Image (tube, rainbow, N blue to C red; front, side, top):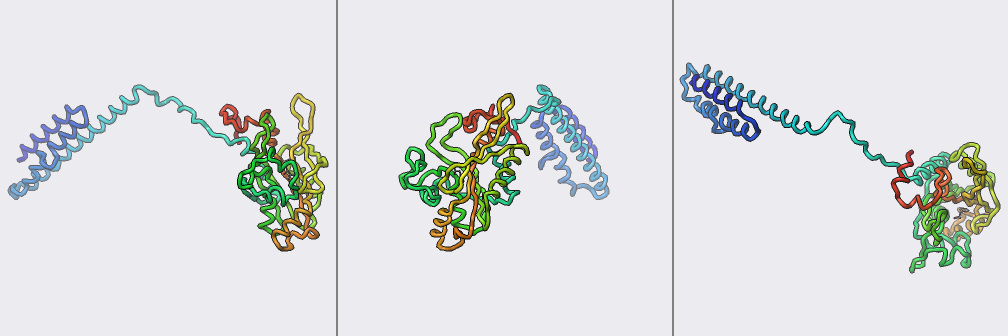
Length: 339
Ligand code: PHE
């Protein structure tokens, strides 16, 4: 019996030594260690072995099994190593990897994030409203008469339902006052739409940032201080800001805000950047009528509002010469911006 085990060991090791691929190795494993393998058959016969030999045979059996198992494991790992070496033969794993394309935020997102950060620090909370608006929210409640040119079909996208694509984010002023009582201090970034001819400085869909502050005793000084601080945070502490008298139906007095730009190699020039003013009491009167309460009693509360073009802010900050670059999704343009 011991001799037979020795023969099996020799046969197995010899067979394993000639193995050059994994399927053959598996065949040999089955032949010796499988359910009906030569070694397994002997183990199955242990019962018929005389008691005084059992121990010796058992020990030898274990030794042989271990020797065969070890030889097989060694051959298996040799085969794997050989296969890996072959796979690596054609490549150089020490080369640096190819650079992964890295994303960058859109310049509008960068500007918006910055603007929101500055205004939140000043106590403004984010507000929101729909892009498809009612005429009342976009115009009537903002004291804009039916014959105002902005309401013209040629300036505004109307739906058959009578709703429209909001022409400015000022509609969110109304939405906010319908839903909240003073003091309110909100900003509302969002898209606005006008039937403009598209050119380097006009798109039919553009982006605005609206602001509204209503409380008791809000003054023009608060408005000026807020916007001056905002623009200096955005464009540097020496930024010059100018308020020019203007007209908006929903503010009185109203102003346009200009920034003085110093482009390298060019004469400094004033650029219009925002509209603003003191909320017209007529707006508070209409809100009061709609709400049916005195929360916005025009004799008790005052407020200021502003609205600015985010696309314009991005153009100024990044020196973008043509608005259309912002919507063309040309990676050569977009990949230049990172936070
Ligand atoms: N809604 C105005 C515009 O789009 C801007 C504005 C907002 C003016 C708030 C005054 C107050 O031109």
